[in-house]
Image (cartoon, rainbow, N blue to C red; front, side):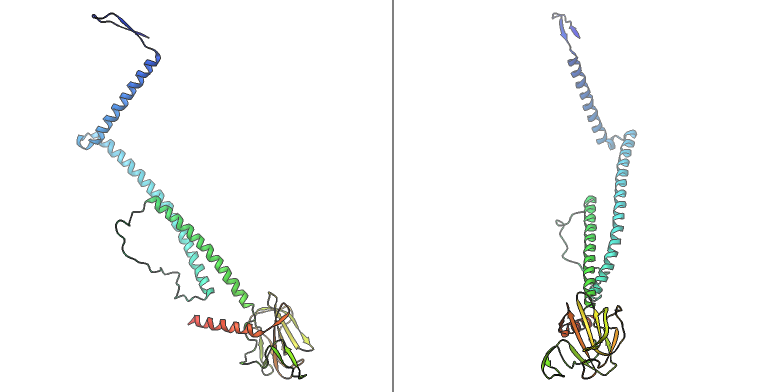
Length: 316
């Protein structure tokens, strides 16, 4: 495109315009229009209150209302999400309270010493204004998520503790720790002694509890009866397997009340004292065998007495 310029004082001039010149001119014009519109928009809404133009005020009010509605929708959505999370946490806390009470019972802790349903005491000096800041919505959501994860981890930990305590409690009930006969003394202890038949020194592999014929004999721990028969030395003999290679033996009984294969409970009446077999008088010969080797029964019975004392003190 060529443009010819005419002027009375000058000679005619010709200017050649390419498509690039036209494109740059259009871009410059569009930029000027955009800058002018932005400037006019800024002046209009900055002084909208002073101008009091109806259409401007309506537009501003509409824009403000839309912004408020968006914020309100955002807050409601976040509140709904937090309400769901709060409900989940409440359910987890109820489960944690129940677990805590069960663990408390297994551990023997008094309820008044550690009540899961009461809030712990808290306090401290009032913080200064510099040390305080307002918690935002996103920060609150992050703190809530972290708390939910912490509650879940603590619940898993309490489950492990409960399982361990329950296992230990079951194992303790399978240990022969209660006296098989309700007497205050034993006639002969575990170890070397003078044999009442030969008069020679011999190793006694159990404890003898002297009592009158017919006195009840109870199982020192729960287990399964593996022998209920007559033995030429032990007379009417009973053996109970308590698991973990631990067996208790009851000898010289006058009567057996259980048979092989029976499951007996801790403290169950299983036989009566007598004087059968190699015996000088009515008594119970009591043995504890670990891996078929006789051990001192007093170690197990004294441990049971200590546990009973601890349990009695914890109930006070």
